[in-house]
Image (cartoon, rainbow, N blue to C red):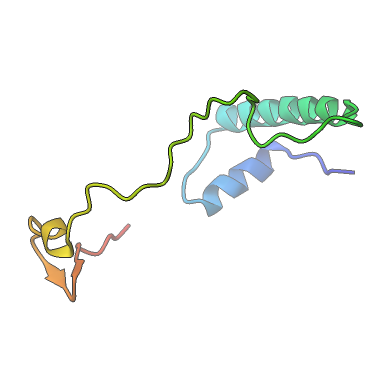
Length: 98
């Protein structure tokens, strides 16, 4: 059985991810999470016996996925042409501090 997630759980999780939630935001997330859990339980209850798996949601001959072809290739020098600072073929950015 899955444990119930409360506002404190989501506030702690947000803090670990380096942002904070207000009490109202945490309560909203708890309600949304409970709704998603109910929907997932409904989906789990649907019998899929005899249903063939699909890779794509369409079965006609039309494919909306393009072939993987290499086009418009630029050299490393062209890619780094407008870079202020580069070291050994890589662009260098200032360190991000919090």
